[in-house]
Image (cartoon, rainbow, N blue to C red; front, side, top):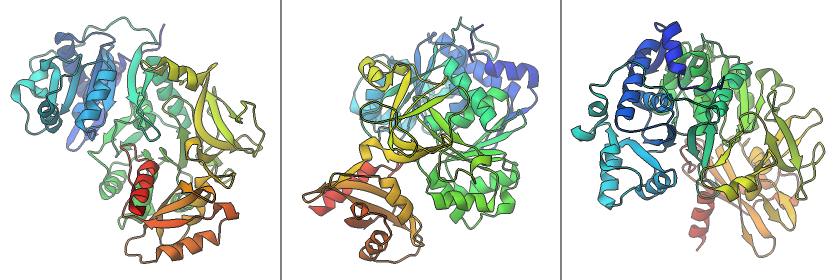
Length: 510
């Protein structure tokens, strides 16, 4: 029997229908109520002619409707394409055309912007733009779209486990976005494997406070829905609202990107007592500096997990019980996954030697949508070549050294930005730091540090440069400049955009 997820919500409605399932703002739905909304939308989609394998996209902020759309799309065998509502119309249109999208749920503001451009999207007919939110055109509104449709089960298609569940577009931090495919089998592994790794149960209560359009959100969304646990979604990240919800709703599992964890630790509302229900605080999406990890583990010990992973399907997990012994690492692969470190010649490297992280496992993507050459380049003989640099210790735990494309070669020597970031990050006045390379006539490349200061802090950039350079381990790690910025530029997944920092820095040097 194939492992597919089209009847997952129906299963929970049948066997635990009166259990509280999903909370968003003042909406609190049990599994039967949530399933009724999913079915109503699924039937509306089928009546509109959306069939198995058709692509359905969203360009929406967090909402109850967005969660319903996710599961209604999957329930009829259609393919979910979640996109950021922050995309500019031109970029959104390019992705919609690339993904062969047939129906789009979007905000009224985006609808107006697309209409103003006068550009037709190749596969979407005029009636298949469905608006959600204020300023709705009644004829194309979500409420009008679902009105009058049955809340009974849709016509479930015949599904195979390799059928596509979704296409997730990469954040584009190192190039043009790529459509990364995930099958029903891959997403079911997200559900079962992460539930086991994070010690989740059907009684768990999961909170998500960031956007759910990026793949990292599925790391807790899938196991929560797979188990039939409780999922609480916030409209957007608000540190005070997050702390209050953790306390009032007795949250057991939460995932945060580094910027959110820093905000949590800095908040005046934070206290260890309000965090006592937590069984897991997971960091994901980008490296979190070591002193912040230790701060979390100090104030709420025994809850800190870290996940290093790629949307393409390889992960390592630092378990809460490994934190003290393997401090500084991002853990090891879960059961069923393999990992290697390879040099430029493709040969495996030994412990302590830095090379490219290569991995494989049951959640590996089948590839990039309509990009066979890129798929062959990234997925070789069943192994995913990550483009990330790292090394293994004697026990096989992974330590990161940065992106291969972010490697700085200064005077012929490899300089890893993360090494400098860890040193700079412990300065008492520095809140965040990002190191990138710029061209140098003398050295080829030289490191530059962009820093965000603590609130109210005042210090000269030259003084910071001197402080950092007096503490780096080698001469070639010395930074050539420090630039103080108000905030780090980030993508929707919360990753710092070093290419934007570099562009802005170079523009200011002219």
